[in-house]
Length: 357
Image (cartoon, rainbow, N blue to C red; front, top):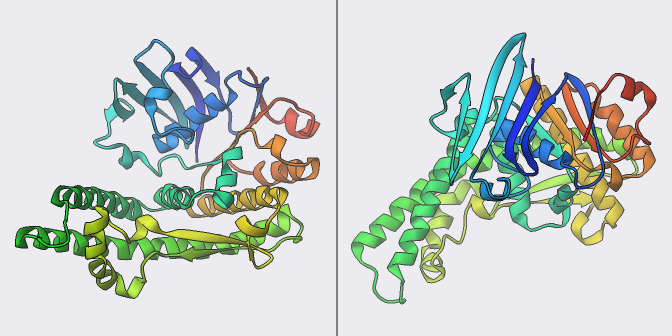
């Protein structure tokens, strides 16, 4: 079993140089708003995922007037100490484990499995489809190296094809034989990768639905029935045909108009689409239920998990706060950020590592 023992932040958000000692089990991060609790959670997440859940731009993470950051972590891996360091300097990012460089950051994904609960989770229910696709990609990648490889190659091909479509600047009349051949090659290669991506996503949603049903009973006491429905953008059995039939549309749009990069999934509450019919309170509960099911899926599949509860307590009533703590307290390592210990029982506080910020 793997867990974080220590993490040091240099030029990371509000921290110029700060060391935190962590423990297996529950770690409670206590402090007022805007004191750096979420920044610490972000750094822990990045040791597992190599990227932030708050921003796509590493330059935003760097402390003001600095040009680099690093996160130095010490982990216990079944009694063996391991050191993982994530570096960022002037647009370049690299990661080392025990002083050995990874050839690519993606090689590290799955080493430390992380699930984060945050107020942003509401976008799973009412946000743009890109948030739900990101949810699929980030979490299936933790479960499967093959999926991550398929996705990486698909995105590379997609970028190259879209660049070609822009370069062609189609006027509706002339398309050279060379460009037509290239477009078909890209499209067929994309379709080949898409088949695998769709299979993984379908399997993931099916597995998640089983645990969503289980989590509904635990979190909502069975008051709400939730299910997820995967909506692939192209039919699994006719991917190549559909993508080739859209080539003329692609040329006019100067981008690839169909494929897994346009997938989505719907979330239902009492057989109605949650984003349309669920109240704000129900939407919060739905997003929490999905994340709880995800944590169970990764923990059961991989045997270990780090759970981050970042600023979610203020979004829940007292009963659900208590339910959530009971559900996660048996995970290997849990981080809870809070401005108050009011809703955390004395028994849990006594067995926790309390870090005051």
